[in-house]
Image (tube, rainbow, N blue to C red; front, side, top):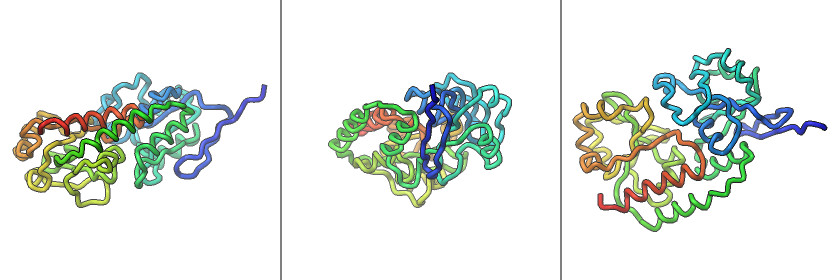
Length: 278
């Protein structure tokens, strides 16, 4: 029997080829969570520098080995996993989570496929690309469409801010146009407080946050590298934001699993929060 080769044109327009369909995928944490949910054969994952700082909790839910993060990749662990495909996301053509040196080294072990998750790509188009890579025929797009329709019909008027606790002096306010999971909310009618950056984050002094972003609802970065509740409690200005004062703070993951089910659940959670009295 002749083995059937496998190929995939990734979002660098690189044709990634393997002699047989991949059966042992090593992936960046976000891609690993996504592909696992889609039933792809993920055998291990790696993180980025913020995962290295935060530890394994950054990839909660993955029951496969962690081979390291950023430059601290354990090549012995990689070799032991025998990956036949490496998958990561990309914001601007880079292999996210790896230095150029580490990416070059891993590319000698297995071909690398990248899925673009920025540059104006819609959430549904990103999800679809992961489906194509995984060979998944999941038809749950209807759940996301229904969730978006419900949000649009709600016509929320509350002001929303998504942010990450960057440092004890600075908050990182997310630009909703940059993050696909936030842009889908904005396009459905959610009113985000304006940001002043075309990139991912606007750096705002904590003391300025209540006046520059007086949100009724906060979407707060739940990743372990973001400041936690105890640290936020030491920042007086945090408690002055209207949404915080009213207890309207929802967890937000800037690096969610990119599946229809995960996206639909997020949109539904935000809709539920915006349609109750704030």
